[in-house]
Length: 191
Image 1: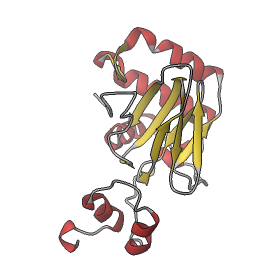
Image 2: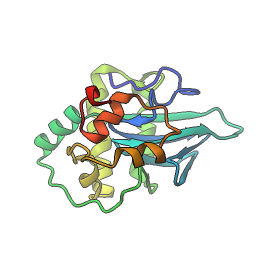
Image 3: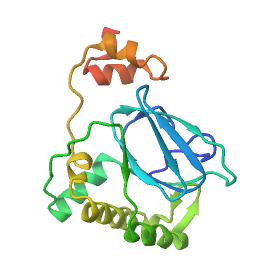
Image 4: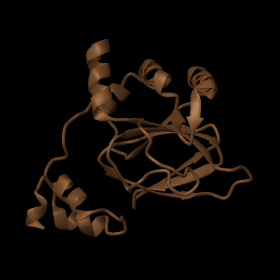
């Protein structure tokens, strides 16, 4: 199971560091993601991708509807397997933003509707159909926006960065020392 949260009302993401690319579709309600530079607002019917190796906070927005997201976490082993199976060639992805909005399409809407029989619980699919539905969504996204291949199939680790500037810019995030070490490609022993 690729569950990334137990309580969709309070804890959409277990941590503010996004370890894998995450597809989010807002079935009901509204949410605001922010990265200390920009707000990204998603309302009912909106979808997008939170990019791996980025920091994001979120806040549920006032809404007459209960918040109900549909979330797919694309982990690296799954993406590597998918890329090999479908012989995916990457296209350079130009954006650097941590949150990418995906424009609405009929295929995405029909896909979301098709999930209902396989829904098992809070952000979980029946194990038998899980990989199939992940593949289906990925094929739809790549058909709709082929340039997403450069984002989804980028397996590079973050390069070294100016750690002091990074920490000063992102001090509001609750990130472990291990994550800061990951961003700087250092071992925790150096902290």
